[in-house]
Length: 109
Image (cartoon, rainbow, N blue to C red):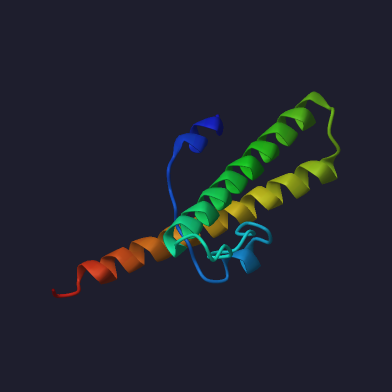
């Protein structure tokens, strides 16, 4: 179900996204001085996307386990809240990217 999201190739970013979802953008942007900023930026965004998908898959698995009676309610709530936070961060990132794109497209050359 959520596995199809992993096939998406989105690479958005937002300042303070790691504060909204702790650990989502860990690894830093431009932490390796030998690499160009764009490759480090792409890596950080790829890691953020991977972590988001993993969080959503974990919430789905916990929900299924709860339906089977194998998971505690608190574990399910924690997993679902983490997934919600990751999804909200991803949506905010997407909105910022779209907004930046529209602003750039309005610039005269």
